[in-house]
Length: 241
Image (cartoon, rainbow, N blue to C red):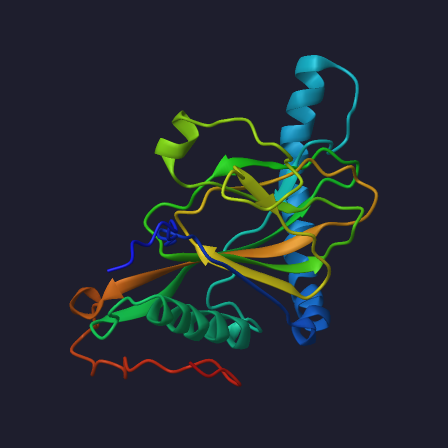
């Protein structure tokens, strides 16, 4: 038998990031989230005043992120929430997970807008007790912040080597970023670390952030003996497996 001296390659343990442009929601969701952002900005005022009192001067809202209360089950968001739930099921199913005994819930959903004067950002983090997370961008451009994803493997980070060219996408990358515009939708497994770069405040930067969890059907409680709702999975509109 002839010896094969060619080194073969197999790729394992990849971390997918899904993205698309879905601009049909932008106009309506900006209108729906305006009031939430207005309230969030009012709630930020005491923190700004405390900072001014402590350090002197007035930096306005520099460095703040105006963060809303929950959007889950709020009027006007059902279509968005249903699509996210169905798409999360599709993605986890396509990844190979057995979801026959699970129901997908949107466990967190909120809108946020970075400081008008700049400095808004998120440090590197993950979302615990979840399975799929994502962003839907309402106000964004090349002048605003952008999401950055970090390598989720601590073993690789511990033994990192310098890259030849950090502009190339290679297995040596420790982070990648996405440029966004209104209507950009990004979804990813919740274990994937992510951050938002410091925003310079040139233009408004607003997005909805959401987290989903697959919960065992036996743990989904009913109330007062009500009949359990249909838990069979449904694919998102216009999607095929």
